[in-house]
Length: 490
Image 1 (cartoon, rainbow, N blue to C red):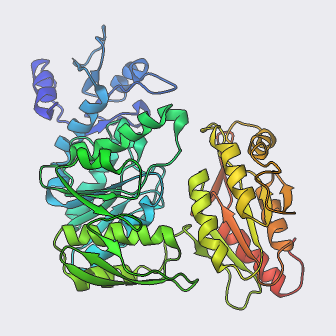
Image 2 (image 1 turned 90 degrees about the vertical axis):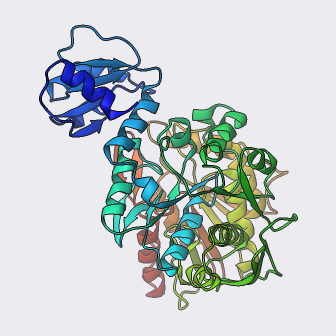
Image 3 (image 1 turned 180 degrees about the vertical axis):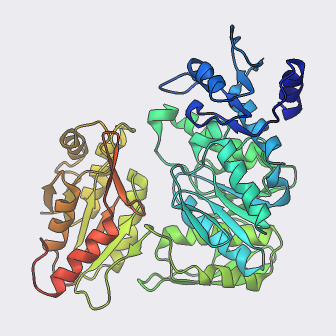
């Protein structure tokens, strides 16, 4: 759908106002907006068209006819597609003036996007980021409520990037966003597929549905736009088949982009990367095998887009850390190591624990929970993997939302059986997350590593409908300070 279609309808009704924006929330409608009535999980936007008109909407776009409304109504087959096309039109198709790299997959999106942006910046290409941790435009960081916002918000961010001198953007493309067409009508210069593991089945229902949503990114790429694909993932062949210019990367299988010999330490990574254009060196403060994949994906993107090798190397090296992604919050003077990580699926938890195990001088203490009103089937799987790989388990709340935290913990514990439990591993079940973090640090001995998993960069906890302030990093640092002064961790 084009804005001119809406404009013609407005002119036909002799309405003088010009279009001032595209809205999908009737409460946010301003005079001159076009209101697109979306069908949501909990509500249908058609119910709010009268409110939108009263607030100044000059036209309504909907999937069904609407009678007795004082503004023009344009009926479309897919309101979400119309929203994306109208938003791109309104903001002047900013993605056509940027090199936008879309990054999708279950794990690794945030770190890979930050690495790609760092590489762009090292190449002298001012870049922005749209993602889970935050949206960044020329050094200005804004809170992110969704990994990928709704189409008008995405297009507004891209437009601002263009207006403020950006020439590139690294963008996380979530499965929800791809399924709900939030990034339709965009022009991507490249796409990245990190991996596919169990997540979001409360929304997609099946792993096949989840995968098909991810694959849409590669079906959307223009002809000749490179698709960076993790060849170690079982779904790689299907992504390759959907791509016009696949470029593979892998650790375990033959691929276009592969690493040299790997060694791991708490200080970071240092390895060679073999590419079709030759070899380059990756030196990074990022830790662990999962970050090897992220670096390969980002470096491979730079190679596929023809960026200079020295810029790729400097970009990888200059990214010191990503908030909430294996973020070491303790100091060298602390007797224990405390790490905060966003891992909130069984596969992400396994990756975190397998990364941490060889780095821990003592025991591995793992604190985690599971989100309420989300895929319940992963809860016992998370319990099983954490039990198998940890010496001490502290099970607590994540974002319980409207669920009983105790019930969530019980469902996690169903995966902890004699077959999955590591030796005589200790187990604590503490619903209050602050108290649970205190317990994890209290029981830690010198040399132990404490992993606080699930919340990562988030500085709140969703309880009911409220966002209650809670910051794992700040809590851990406070408790570590008390531990050092021997004043107790409570």
